[in-house]
Amino acid sequence: MDATRSPFPLTFDPSPSGSKRAGVQTPEAPPVEAAGAVRSSPLPLDPQLRARLTALFQEGREMWDRFEVEVRQKKWHPFIPGNYERILEALLAQTPVRPGASLAPRRFLEWGSATGVVTIMADLLGFEACGIELDADLVRVARGLAERHGSGARFSAGSFLPEGYRWTPLDGDGRSGTLGDGPSAYPDLGYELADFDLVYGYPWDGERALMRDLMQRSGSPGATLLVHTGTHDIRVCSLSTAF
Ligand SMILES: C[S@@+](CC[C@H](N)C(=O)[O-])C[C@H]1O[C@@H](n2cnc3c(N)ncnc32)[C@H](O)[C@@H]1O
Image 1: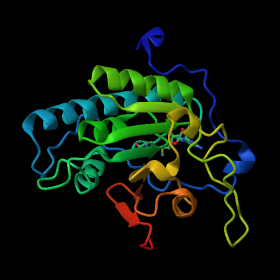
Image 2: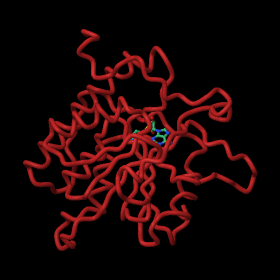
Image 3: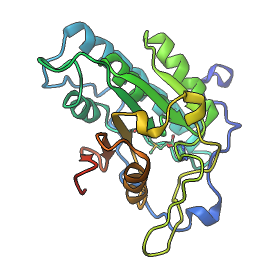
Image 4: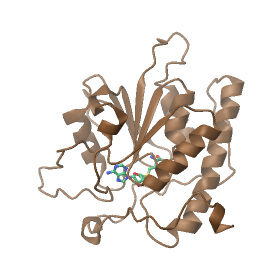
């Protein structure tokens, strides 16, 4: 591959310090679908929309393959993609394009949006969709992907942790795993966390509790949190439900 044409510059360094990674042993799951293994969703979808999603997932997987070789094999990086087909199923259960559902757009936020596939998927499904990603190079990649797929998804570079948020678990271990530090991205988006109806995150080991805490403290009481917990598992949590 011609490095000058790569969408992944090798210069970025979003990896957290060694001390912050000390408590992290494994990702929540290494959930990589095989490149090109596009399977059709069993859910009824408009064929044109299904084709757009298939093309999006295909390009997302190809990007991941390049990212793995050009970036991750040279230096550790927290980006691991979720299982796009499984995320689609989870989003369809929440989506405003379900027959009989309200047509009012609902607001979707992806925490750590990486190459943007999931946020763009949500936009194509009818959500007003935003992604926050700490790695500014990945934000540029996501914006390019959105443009190529005719999506109005918005991406902001920065942290999904609101200004002033501190993770203070009862056991006193407030390390935030692989999550990096940076200025909060909400002011740039023009929204607060509480403005979103549906929030999606893919945490590494030990970070799920932080995500739940963040939703409970700063999310809208009516919001839903989708947490990708393994190759095929996505947990759905409304704030009134323990998970
Ligand atoms: C496990 S990947 C998930 C990628 C994508 N959400 C998916 O499901 O395919 C986690 C992403 O979160 C990003 N990240 C880490 N800390 C962050 C923070 N504080 N704010 C925003 N993004 C962060 C990483 O750079 C990485 O791209």
